[in-house]
Length: 231
Ligand code: 5RP
Image (cartoon, rainbow, N blue to C red; front, side, top):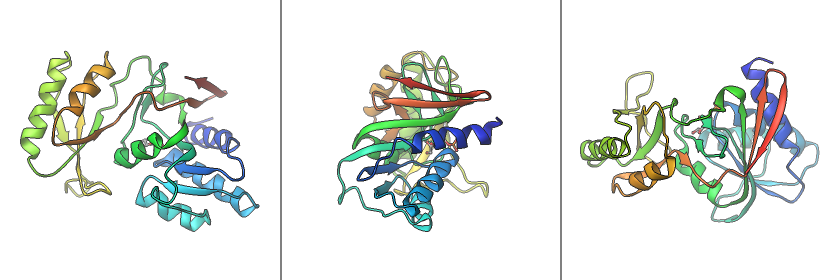
């Protein structure tokens, strides 16, 4: 299986976790798109679920697929969220936010009894950090926030530049919540908990892409098949 086929296979495996009557969180990204498409097929076949989307893009796709949708205010507790990841390590800590949806993704994951990550094998890493860590920040005071983020990285022994994410047209990337993203290319994150704690102390940081203690199960699809990792 190539990477696209692996993403599809992980999504197809996870869609079988969905049972009638469930409230489902829908992730964001290309792997999640496969999941939404496959869930839509099941819904059109008679499966009874209600879903909450983690981004405007997923919301639009789910609407087109005919999946009944609710807000998190209407459905504050979800049974299952299925989402992709940019990296995931054997302790099931993930980096998310490559698609810029980390804030809503983390809120939805936190409101879910079970979060399942679906990913191709390239996302499985011994040590997190090769993928730049996305950090969602408020536009006000961007420069001191960026400096504080870089200071936090240096303090935990991983000096790095925090780079403002831009669109392909060169404009600052704006999240669904109207925030900006700083990408922190750390190389490796030996102590994700320590970094998460430091970032959470910075006033301009809305959320960071380290998902710690949230992922219950990871469905990893490789060239030769699927394996499931449990927390
Ligand atoms: C979006 C995310 C995605 O889940 C992550 O970027 C993985 O994306 P893909 O499935 O396209 O590889 O966190 O904010």
